[in-house]
Image (cartoon, rainbow, N blue to C red; front, side, top):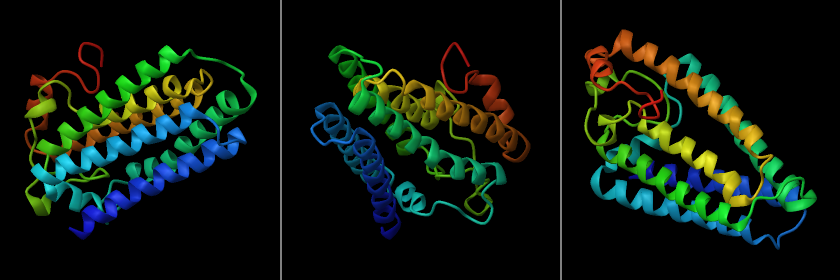
Length: 226
């Protein structure tokens, strides 16, 4: 399970890097909401990996490799843009809630953020648990007889993994108490929306049965909306 270890290590690195930017922008370490947020994310990562390792370990092994030769070009662009977008959210939150206090969200918002974070991890974990093709980037896995997955959360939306990730992104400003953080988060949401649309185009043209799946499962990310 070297790939699973590599995946978990990469998630720890991303979390640590987010924390470094967050506290550097804040200019202080005595920021309890930031520590609680990072602790919640770390707990979510640990619990998510433990569940998927128990029920669908192949997914974690595959997710240990980020880019593959046949990764779609648009997804290489997404990967290149996602990291600076995520770090920008940390910088804005640190400058706002941690240093200058440009905005202020009450403690009750942090409770809502914690709930959204947990729900986001729950949806993402459920998707990984049922989808053996849940790799980190978009490609048609012909060597693995790629097929459409319709069980679990895929009964309700076509991209539950992205839905879970977006819930986590939207939860962060609430958790950290920064209204201005929603500005860079909006850029992250836009990236995922664009990625979803481009991925659907590839799946419709290259994955047998996807058109039928779209007719049965109408929504991409949010039931009743889109």
